[in-house]
Image (cartoon, rainbow, N blue to C red):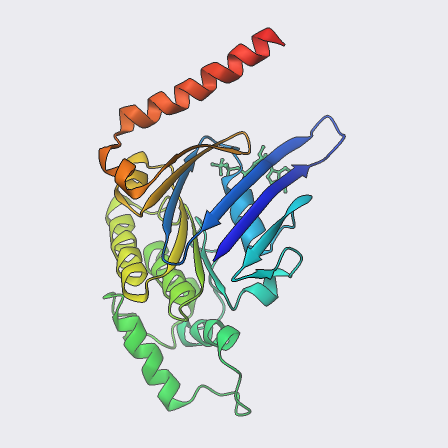
Length: 262
Ligand SMILES: Nc1ncnc2c1ncn2[C@@H]1O[C@H](COP(=O)(O)OP(=O)(O)OP(=O)(O)O)[C@@H](O)[C@H]1O
């Protein structure tokens, strides 16, 4: 359903600061796939999600969604199909707006706005019902400003906003990394619940190797803008952290050898 065809992205091309962020990425994502992505800092993981979301456009290559070439479709036109949760709990929500207003914005991205701009009672009840799925009592705080919520509550709300419209693709960019372990666990179990219930096609970046092994049906490892290792669902069952580290070491050795030989 999502295809990335030979994507290249270079920052500050031609300058001393040139960074090849993506170097010929080819990826076919099937409907219902849950892909975890790991890789060292600067490997190109967030750039990849930015290209999928339309926040960045590739220098070369194409992005296709359900048979349509969306390579140059701007981010706001893709937001109907793509849900995203960022590492920073402050990123996905608007602090000066209430919980209800934030949900109404997310809802409005997918559903046509009605002429009466106010939130109807029916919609209010729907929002309450959805919020109660989080198990954090936010359904009783519809009029609270989001800026007053804790990081964990805010991230759970971001997750709800990114998923309750059942997007074609859910992008998770280390979305539990900034939370303390207990809250990270809450947000992670909500993530699994929503992905399973709505059968969401998901791409998740994580620095937690065990999480990358345990979750999803495919695992990708990136390094220097390339996908250097991929494990299918069957291969993931046998995968361990030491085996992943070995794969990473192999590619690092190969790179050092190439540098030495060049
Ligand atoms: N807007 C930008 N301008 C210049 N360089 C950038 C920009 N965005 C990313 N880069 C560079 O592109 C490379 C890939 O960055 P990216 O953020 O995609 O890596 P990442 O794998 O997500 O890393 P991390 O795990 O540290 O978040 C890095 O070298 C980064 O410094």
